[in-house]
Amino acid sequence: MSLKVHEALSWASSFLAENKRESFAAELLVRHVLGGISRTDMMMRMHDVITADEMEQLKSAVERHVEGEPVQYIIGKEDFYGRPFIVNKEVLIPRPETEELVEHTLMLIQEHFPLDNEIKLADIGTGSGAISVTLALENQRLDVYTVDIAEASIEVAKENAQRLGASVQFVHGDLLQPFIEQGEKLDVVVSNPPYIPDEEIAVLDTIVKDREPMRALSGGKDGYDFYRRFMKELPLVLKEKALVGFEVGAGQGSTVAEMLRVTFPGAYVYVKEDINGKDRMVFAVIGK
Image (cartoon, rainbow, N blue to C red; front, side, top):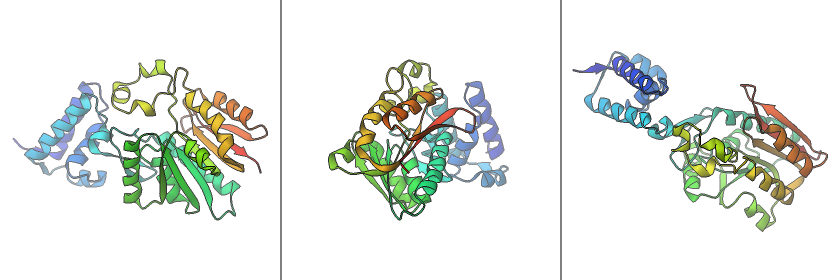
């Protein structure tokens, strides 16, 4: 018996809900098996018959998600700042909160470097390239570098940069060490580093802790390992006038802000809440 698209969608939604998964994922998976179509196209095809092959693909995809594989890895992409980014098990799935980090960074750059023709910016922790690629596309004045310790992540980000037409220089290395070794100075450093305390990782949803790369999640015993390293390395690479923007975990804002104040006395440091009212970003404006 052949099913129509709306019937296949209803089955997938119910099956996911019964297995304690978000039923909304059904729509993403249906659109994927129908050829990566838009939501509008799917709505227009609701009464079309879904082929046997498409139904088999849908069943397989739904079962993979029930078993714990993130939807984004199954469909191979996630939207960020209005653009589709390729993702796989080598990279953290971009989160909506990180879009706010990018947006505020762009605003600060415009405010503090209004007349500079070229601004040297480094995104530390490349991942999918969501931050670096977006910044490069949104502000043509930026000379964007991005660093990651994992070459597999860099390869994913390079593909995203190429597909989206972004000019980004990729560096394989550990935090700011490549710039320190070369004696290079930066105007802006932005990062969404691993910040989850080790004890909290154990209680994360299995879709996150068992599938997304641990190197992109673990911030050490208390979650601050990478921020501590940044405080040692940032003074070695920043110009006298510079900007720093971090994403932080909920409840970490005041601690990271104090780290920056101690490291850069006289800097204007503040915590910015995300759209849900959680302290999600910390910024430092250094020099005038």
